Image (cartoon, rainbow, N blue to C red):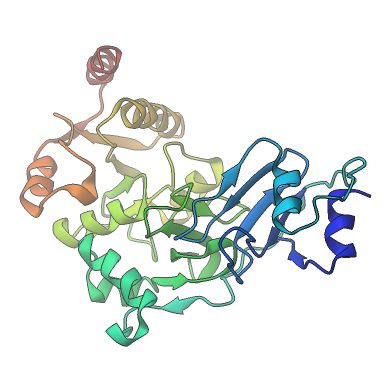
Length: 306
C-alpha cells in the first residue's frame, strides 16, 4: 500500500488544501491537534508549522512519520498517483479574526495585535485595513491582510508573527493584485513599495497615497489596475539592498514602457520603510527625483559594487 492508504487503514485523518501532492495532518511529534504538519508525500518533505514545534524532515520523512505513529511495520509500495494543480478562488481562513478590538484576555490574538503595534501599525490602521489573524490551518499563527481592489476581495497576505514560521509570508494563489489603493485619485503621485507594512508606514507618516505590489516585480495585472485608477505618476520606494534596487530598476523599466512617469528616492533610503523613523521617511521624501537614464546607470553601478 502507499503512504495515504497506510494512514487511512489505521484511521489516521488528514486534510488537503490547494497544493497538489500535499496533505496536512496532526503532528505526532508535538501532539498538535490542528493539522499543522504539512507533508509533500511525493517529494518526501515534511514540516510542522506549530510555533512551539521545530520538527521538519527532507529525508526518509514518510518512514519517520509511520514509526512515530507506531506503524513502522507497514511496508510502503509506490507513491500515490500524482495530482495536478488546481486554482481555487481566494478565501479568508475559517478562523480569521479581526484584531482591532482584541484584548489581553484573548492571549494568542493579543500577541498578534502586539506584533502589529510593535511594528508601528496604529489601531486605526488595524481597523481600516481589516487586519486579522488565524490560529489554525494553512495560515496558522499569521497576521491576515485582506487584499481588496475597488471593493472586490482579491486574496490575502499572511505574515508569520512568531518568528518560527517559514516562509515568513504566505500569499493566496491567483491573480496578483496591488494592495492599498481604494479609489481613483489620478492627480496625486502614488508611492509603490514592496510590502504592505512598508506602504502603511509611508501612508501614516508622509500622508501620501501608497500601495504595495507584494513583491519585487510588477505584473501586467497591477499595471492595468494603475491604469483603471488613472495613476500615471509613480514613485518607487525600494528596499535598500541589492535585490530591492535591482527589482526597482526592472519595475521602473516596465512602467516606462507603458508611458508612466517614474520617480525614485536618491540617495537611497537607509533602511526598509517600516523600519525607518518619521524623520527618516520625510528626509527620504525630500530626495525624490525623476528616474533619468543617467540616474539609472548610477544605481546600476552602485548595485554592482554591493
